[in-house]
Image 1: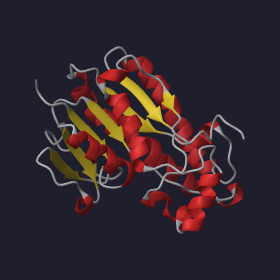
Image 2 (image 1 turned 180 degrees about the horizontal axis):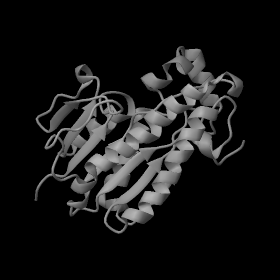
Image 3 (image 1 turned 30 degrees about the horizontal axis):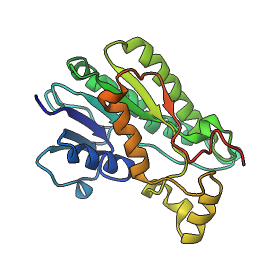
Image 4 (image 1 turned 120 degrees about the vertical axis):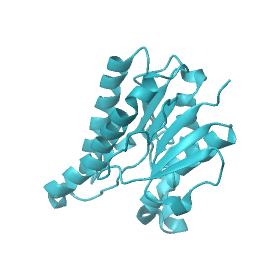
Length: 235
């Protein structure tokens, strides 16, 4: 049996890096699309395409002919009072969170349709869509659009391709570094969650691998809230 092939956009750091590491550890072939080649996992199972997903175009034959799973990891955290967020910042967040995902899916759609292994698309939302949070207007707006895209595409692409999402809360990655820049900030952030801890990239990666696995072959159109209980529990 041929090894499954996955495409991970933004797989050189944070959650994407954790996903790539876990996929390779299970013997899968992974194509990573990223702007940061210096942070890649070293493996014969990995191929790398250096590309800015928003400004660069995919060349003919550049992507795998067959794709069993696609994960789009790039995102943004713009936390400001609503009155301080410019229209351009709203557009920038929408571009990276939504248009980048749309462009990636379009580029890989034919390869996904060739898969015979219940192919899957995994996108990322945020806990701030389900739970209103101050200063999250821009990121919540764009990630809310992602949740709409997930549900729409899951209907349009079924039964061939499954489409699901993950909505994390605060996770210990470079993207959130300003929010957790000291042990005191990490502890304080953790205390705001029912499970009294912030997430790790590995926590989120495990959920992504589940959604791409045969174990989730009857799962589509869903948003998994991997958020320490933040979106559903009030203590």
